[in-house]
Image (tube, rainbow, N blue to C red; front, top):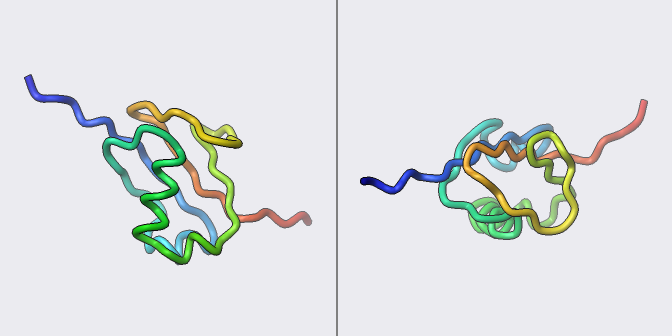
Length: 82
């Protein structure tokens, strides 16, 4: 039996879409948000100097969070009030 790939979906907003070059994509075999951030910075070095929050399944997270297959991770740029 083939091992099922554990895919997560990523969403980027605002200037983070410009940095990553996409607004929606999938990645496989990501175990936690620390690993995800490291991979994203490797692929998109400009993220290292960008301020953004991560949300997992529509909940803003702080610190490292375990990711499960099917999770949706959003990269959220700073918000400004209005």
